[in-house]
Amino acid sequence: MSSMTGGQEKAYVDEALKEILPRLVGMRQDLHMHPELGFEEHRTAKIVADFLREIGLEVHEGVGKTGVVGVLRKGSGSRSVGLRADMDALPIIEQGTPEYVSQNHGVMHACGHDGHTTMLLGAAWLLANTVEFSGTVNFIFQPAEEGQAGAKAMIDDGLFTRFPCDSVFAVHNWPELPEGVAQTRHGAIMAAADRFDIRVFGGGGHAAQPHLSPDTMLATSELVVQLNTIISRCIDPTDPALLTVTQVQGGFSHNMIPAEARITGTVRSFDLRAQDIIEASLRRLAEYIPAAHGLQAEVKYNRYYPATINSAAEADIALQAAASAGLDTSVAPKPALTSEDFSFMLQQKPGAYLWLGQGDGSAKPLAPLHHPNYDFNDNVLPLGVKWFVEVVKKQLEHRLTL
Image (cartoon, rainbow, N blue to C red; front, side):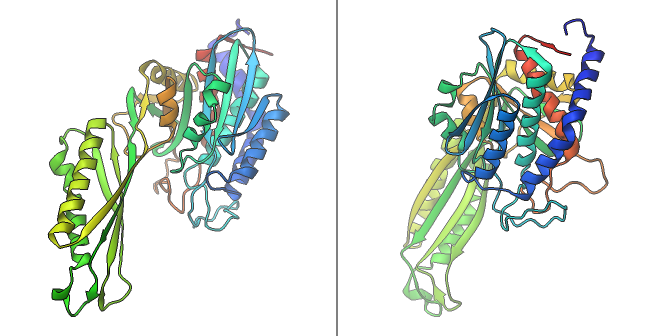
């Protein structure tokens, strides 16, 4: 009701959350027990769709293969907002020992998407039951964030045509920040992610007769070393960028120089010009170093995720919503070199991406993202729910209902 004071409104929302929180915790832990890889989130998508229907939303399944969109309309307002959560897990063998450990061997929720999905479901429940607003909220449950561009798949399937959004918002748990803390910033918040694969070939022979054939492993080793000079020697030292070689493969025997070897790695950057320089430098080194050894090289370079760029007005809204949700809010001092396919949505619509702290304050820090001992901190579920709700309240005219 419009006559509520700020304190009364907060108490009312907190009381409503108490009603649904035990169910949300159970749902989150159930999702953790049954993780699914990108574009395979069939069980997860069904749970999401069933819950949204239960609370009276219009539900659309199979958006971008396994994505789900729930639509909640109230009042006569024409404005709309999109709230996004990712649903997929990672191909990791879980090493933690919670009572809800993954039942799908080799797959685990090591990035907290089980928590993101649950927080957005909680926000849908709260908005459907306690908040009257004028406009449309599109709850976007996205598949395949982990390297398979599920956001782009949803966009290509008509996401913003079928479900118009004036702005879009997303949140990611952040173990490096304490529980109860939230950060974001204007502009870049996450890096562009590129993958490179280099095949060095044309050699091979007996290890005891290196003078008779080009040494593929020697050339590959030299190339790995030189790739690590690109950032320090080709990019302005004040521009954040990263190149990491993550795989070197070659050879089958201790006494044989292999016919070919392969190098794989990742590049992270925030500036298109830096991205161009890095790719051109990598291609140049991959051509000339093997050639100096009498070998050839083949390069595949894939710019698979663009940088995640917050629009200024929506970044401010995200921070204001975090403060209204009771979070200790500040501007992130620098972006992260991790990547996020929410970037594709931000290329289409103004919006913002928020980091939600989940560190528990113990002397032993929580396992980082993508670690086999990682687990989502259920204490932050209500904080994420309230943040999503506050975003809607700030974007659409609203009042609470008793």
